[in-house]
Length: 294
Ligand SMILES: Nc1ncnc2c1ncn2[C@@H]1O[C@H](COP(=O)(O)OP(=O)(O)O)[C@@H](O)[C@H]1O
Ligand SMILES: [Mg+2]
Image (cartoon, rainbow, N blue to C red; front, top):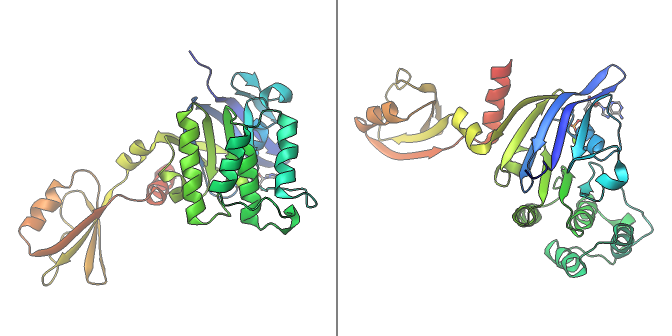
């Protein structure tokens, strides 16, 4: 069987009394785009820093492509990364930075590098000190992607990018996965990873709350129906599966857990002008997980 791209066993990091990461067991498969989700302070960056060998685990172990992460030279042959706080050499231009990093790794695909510069609409001619956060982020992303590493560890890589560039990033992540590369993508914004990840892990206070496919997560959640009635709204609160009924701006927002049949049957006997349903955002699903966990 092919090696897992990333594996951790009981991975733990203490900073004094703070337990940043607490016994994390994780397996990320090769070719997978894996969302690493959690609010600020959950331990995402600390985990990624341990995988990169920048921080040492207090306990537990981790491997990248079966190489122990403390074997930095070997592990980094498989790795590309965007660190949470992108640092640049202020006196170098973007292109000089990419050339320097490329020489270090010795495996840059130059036409692909230039394609990345183009697709991110990155201006490589300016000194890095003049780059905005978004441009530093683009520089880091190009540097991470241009070597086509087996495993990409990306710590909130799109936090400074506009939506168009975020979309371009998602395309690139999908292309990487199609080539068999693995992408670990951390975020505290669920909307950001919802469309692109195969599976997600939800981290809270250093612990794994859940690992699930997006379908799993949605299955647990509920569906929201926005109903516009011709005339006064009927009482829907007693319909089986209905968990809330909120009148908002002339519509009635009904949240249903489980099959919608009972609600639809009730609505069939009312005068409905308009019915719109939407799946809950991962944000809503995420919150319901938190509540269930408490
Ligand atoms: N170098 C450090 N020294 C002390 N505490 C730290 C350090 N790095 C992170 N922490 C703490 O560890 C916890 C997890 O932080 P972090 O991994 O940055 O979370 P996230 O990336 O999910 O926002 C937080 O409580 C944070 O304050
Ligand atoms: Mg972080």
